[in-house]
Length: 548
Image (cartoon, rainbow, N blue to C red; front, side):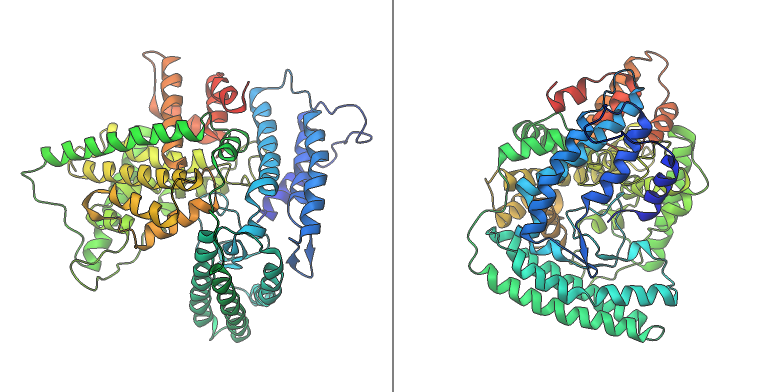
């Protein structure tokens, strides 16, 4: 969904900027005109709404794709010669978004291939700037509402939930794809949405009974749709992966990543082996220490979470970056409640298994939430970057930095009093490599979903990622829906490693981590290849991505 508040701010910022006289007139030259074009582009990008329901019909999508060419022509008419690098970076962001829409129409076509695209309700917030897509435009996303709803908000949400039946009716016409895994998993996604709606209805019953009723009506419509999807899935026979050639195009032209599918496979295989080697050596070095035990009680778990957050925030402020007052509350807001186990051998889920043994690795990864808070408290200068990027274009930076932070704090010395936690850091990297490779293999049409989950499970130590567990089941479904996302955690981390290396080389003997991180945070959550260019003046990473 478009962040309407941010879009309104952009409109105010560019008010009064004059546009070219005609579409065929002189090429626009100013950055202000680029901002204006971006605002207009965002209005065009989303589908037309018909009585509150987005139109993804064959005719509507064909029309949008044809009109996209005109927008790309307008963008390409800009001459950015002489612009500051930061403004040229913004041009590439608009270019990548337009490529993302083109790729959706030519290859992904989620409205045609993916039943889970039609999930109409999200209860939990996302930890990245825009909910990882593709997602249907106009869905009810509760992260944009405060937990205590006003009566006006409750009425608005009820109206939107009651459109679910119309959404699913259109979906039955639009969905013609043959990817078996997408269909099979799509029914599960709709039913999981219904579980969230049940929880939501219960929570709203006393205060807003009509909203609870609307949620239950949406559940009825969703269950009927899920049954229809499950029945259709029985006849589907095709692969769901997009193939290597299209994947390469997406990496370079949408995500601005300087690698191909094959190169990413090689890099992740290398990182997987490195993670295992590092983990096993750490495990061997700690063989005389007692094993890490999971927090046994709610009190012990809460205490460990808050102590680790204290320690993490202090270390950030002392060694790594400028810490602002809003950051600590952002980190504490995502401390989860204790979840009892049914038996001593049961698993809570991969990341819970890490977190219950020691919270520090996940404190580092939850840098996500500092990023999220910063978007609100310290918006970047660029109006184009104030709106979350579409098509997951942010993934190498958002997921890459959260993953990189786990090793950065390790290498910077934060875990010196927690030696066994290094094992968890390496296990987390191994898990991300394994699941990223499994996603690549799905899209390379080498594995189907079932094979991918089993592959990922086999390569995660300690049995923490069972193939039938919720973590990998949802991750691999997620990655088959969203080309380039699964490996972005590790690839993004590696690109940030390259950025730090070049930034430090340019300051030989005078590198300062705080200076680096403060500058890095001010650039915004954009592809690392663009961050690299803006922070170092070196455009080679981007040039490799876009073929220049």
